[in-house]
Length: 220
Image (cartoon, rainbow, N blue to C red; front, side, top):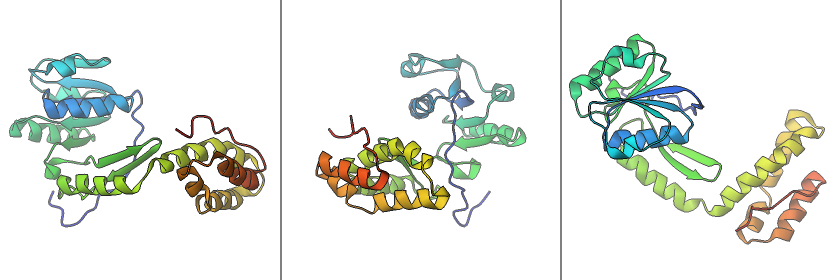
């Protein structure tokens, strides 16, 4: 399918315990498998030959064989990472018939989803995409954005996660809860975290919430 514009819908998927099939056993497949395992997926690898780095991974199923459509049985997601054009195209077609989302590495025209470049800082995960036009530009943008996000933002996200149950337990409804978070995010809190001023962080949180927050492990 020829795409004249970026029509992709950005989404984060919980793959915990879900079956993902990776066709290919090389370096690219290895990187994909590592990220899938990190996301908690169950991974099935289909390839006649598999790198030692893949065979040493725990929790994956390896079928040393050429690809067949039945290899997609019970999958929720498919990745084709082979250097064989015919195999990649066949996987894409089989996945489409089975109504499975499929990514064919470096072939956006054969994909029903693409994988973004990802920046991670603690709980923060930022996905960056150029719609498959230029993965190199996505990586450059990841570097630029990463240079703007100091460790204080990771610490802030940890704090916001800890106070969320407290805020939601208070009166005020959805709008009131949203205002509390907006006030904190736009307050001196981020500057206090950046400067490592634990007392000021505690004071800002107490003023907003009326309770002291456990800051253990937030600061280096």
